[in-house]
Length: 171
Image (cartoon, rainbow, N blue to C red; front, side, top):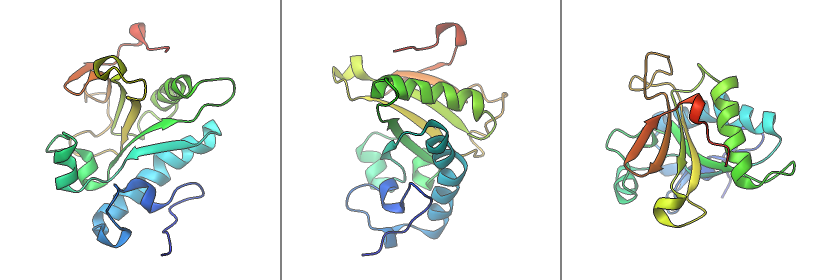
């Protein structure tokens, strides 16, 4: 099977859950995934010089419900990705992920709809439950300062706090 290349470093199948083939992706969803890669993921990958490991991109409704996703999740339309950053430049993957969160927050402001640092390590007692959620601007999250949920921190699946630079995570 030929993989659909979306950019220098990303393929369509990397943004799909296991069991979903590229030909099952609705055309409008693929357009949103292409925009997500073009506007956010590939430029971030290029700027950091380190691979991004996508955990979740597009989620069909059944998959979204199975993982506890919100009924209005940007993942349903291909407008969001959850990822972490590989270790590099003498940083652990966790430090690299925090660095990427702050880089997106400061250097990509206005280009994303929503940015969330999801740190569920303590909640799940699992050091791997740590990632960034980033989305394209949408009607729900246009990425403007008026959207108070534009930049968030999450410590559990149901706990979100508006980002406060005075309480910025450092690892």
